[in-house]
Amino acid sequence: MSLVAVMAPALCGAAEPRSPYDIAFDDAMARYHLPGLAVGVIEHDRVAWVRTAGETVAGSGKPVTSRTLFKIASNSKAMTTALLARLVAAGKLRWDDPVTRHLPRFRMHDDWVTRNIEVQDLLVHNSGLREGAGDLMLWPEPNAFTRADILAGLAWLVPQHSFRSRYAYDNLLYVVAGEVAAAAGGASYEDLVRREVFQPLGLSRCRVGSWRSADVDDVAQPHMRKDDRNVVINADADVVPAITSAAAGGIRCSLDDMLTWARNWLAPDERQLAWLPAERRRELWTAHTPMPISTRRRDWDRTHAYAYALGWRLADVDGTWTVSHTGTLSGMYSLLMLLPDRHAAFVVLINGDGGAARTTLGEVLLKHFTAPDEHATIAGYAARVAAEPVARGEAAPDVSVRQPVAADEVRTRLGIWRDPWFGEAALCEDAGRVRFRAAKSPLLDGIVMRSQGRAFVAWDDVRVDAEAWIDLPVDARDGTLTLEKVGPRADFSFDFEDLAFRRVRDCD
Image (cartoon, rainbow, N blue to C red):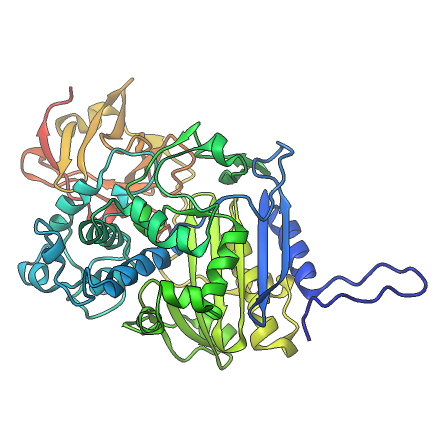
């Protein structure tokens, strides 16, 4: 029986009991003060329940609906791999093609890897690069990095592990995969996704590349929590620009579209199987790279196997097979969970500071299918999160007591510094203090402070929520300037650790 079956009204006129989905939805909305939330559930291969609440822009009165566009972030990766699978089915490329067959100028740091890395390797996070390596060329947005910069910069990113030896999440190689698709398909990545994915599947609201806000109208804006209220960040302009990261995380879709996308994978009809045959679908859901199983996943979900396929994560949860992915961007969170053997799925879209909300709501919805006897609640999982100990060495140091570094203290080390993949950054005097300013990433701009006996950069813009230790060489003429996340648990996309600046000239 459906969890959202219609209840007959009581003779006394009492209010209809809320479904378990409604209870979880309301509890998440209230606990986490979300600006907007959209959730849909599929049961028996059909959309069984849809709920939206909140606003596209906090305080605007514009409601979130099932047609509202959200940034789906890394849920874009499965659309990228579906596009590549279409090209494989058409004979335009093979999964085991060397990347250089399609992109002759492609280079990794190791020449052997350059020659041997295959198209499928771009998609399964086994390159040997550090987690999030080079992501500073994608985020924070806006920035001036191009896909050509990424192709040129990859050769300078030193691997942390050997090729194909272990899992480490990577975004840059998905951008490369988008360029492989463009080369093989004879059109831009954006045009191919529209033609090969959106149009044939009827994803009529999904957008990628440049588009006009007025033509879509109903678009959720990202928010952050500030002073106990939701504040818009990175608001769209009248014309939404194309972004470098599209293939890794740049697609926007509505809840209706995401449910259509999910049903295509659960119960494809004849037309959808003609779009992508069963063999190609199996390839996308074939495990490639084993993933580490966290203590939380073992305790909460009794997971024994966890792996990355082509744009999807595969895991057993309470003995049930799941195929899923999440998406995370500043002020936007998404989750798509498929339970193929249960003919079920759900989608969660949030336009606020929703990491904790996605975790707890996703778990409660999941348990309705995999362990209904547990009677999972938002409050219960929130308490479990709060009770988790912080691992040794992961606690962020307290840098609230700080003072600016005087320019005179480091005068011999001021100047323009250059990293081979990130480009130039100015370390120059600003009213007696020292300012760090990245040339191609304007949000990475802040004053150098000192706390805990170390110098760090306090970014001016509150959207950059990962401060960076900055280590200056004693001799600027023959030394390297390096950075490191102050908080060890900060988002891995703040890839400061892969930067190595050399001084190139005096301040302009």
